[in-house]
Length: 199
Length: 199
Length: 199
Image (cartoon, rainbow over all chains, first blue to last red; front, side, top):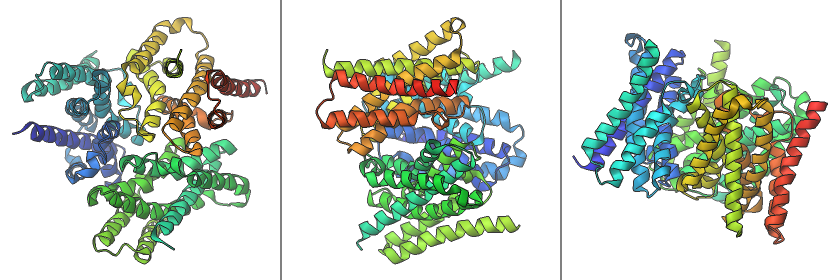
């Protein structure tokens, strides 16, 4: 598997988990099929569209490659159909969101570095790629943006993007360490949520 | 009348009806003249600015061609002055919005295809062009986004954009069939609203 | 001091005052350190990112030059630490916001003119640069957007941007007159607020 194939797979997996998080949030708001798919697609593609505009990759990948939109829409529609079997939607949203946060932090930061954005800017773009979709989802569904709640969220993405920038600087941005960075962000976010739950 | 003149006229008509829809929504919220013009301009130009950023037409037409801003601002100000005579603002907003939806779906999809965006992406950009302004209007005025309400809205735009993409593929994207596509989206939206009203 | 150094200083001062305005608004909403820094950074950099996307300066300066992000984050964090000593946060937000409005109106309009945007578009981009950050701040903290309240706000920015465009046309866009334009917008905004207060 080449690096670019791995990156595409990571990106599409992030699209799917954010689509599922957006769709779950929309189901919790009792939206119909079209509303659920719409919120799912915004959550899945919003961060990446912003990233691509910022690094001048136009049209953004979400429009240039049909697999992004189809992955997002099909996942969101599947969540709508299956949701009677998905208990505890709130927890589902949070866990999927944490997984997407890790995946998009890593792919977003890598793409910005590849586009020759300086390290500080690349970390910011990586973080925005990761938090942008969830922000769109929360604005659309009228929730307090997750990024403003008390648990670690944007900071987990920022920490992950710094790890990626360091790996890239030392020539270690290969599949193994990058997968570690995804897991690092995911774990940091979940631990933060759990400590708050038990606190 | 050349194609590009026809496209410009369709685009400016869309700007005017969306400006009127935004201004009517702002009047209903009892905003003053400046607030009404601001919401009208956002509703009129928001979708097209996003479209132009996505297809790398910079500066966006809304900034490059003064007729866009002036059409939007003058229309919104006129609505503000005339509103005591405009009864039933809510219905007015919905009908104008449906007209804008049809016009922007067609012009947005055509522009994206002209910029060599693949068909799926061009349909998405056409849809976002059409729904973006109304989304901005609803976020600013604190309404539930129309795109998330139960009646067909984004789907009407998406269906219209698919029609435009098909017409373009088969070399039939001329004034007649494209006008039909505008009417198709407008009618689909209004029928959806009316059925819901009578249901 | 060269013109570009003066412009950079004006821009970074605008970043700092908008960061402080966003941070003060977030403190008033009782957000924690990370929330306060996040809202501060959005308020400080949001308008400029939009401006740079619109004039195709990519990556936007906020990502290309680390001093922007660091200025915004450090200022916001300082406001968080100092806020027990900052009485009357609401007034603080309004005054800082007025200062940022003046600074960003002038730098935003100049940059758009430098990028060969026609005058009407350059004025709009200058205005959006100035009001964009505050709009993001208000959407994030759930306030009615300041731009829609009754006092002069966007109009002050628009008037200032027209002054800048006129100065530029007549070759008078030098440090002195441009500083006057900053003060003009700032004063116009504050007078509008004060008249409303005493009215």
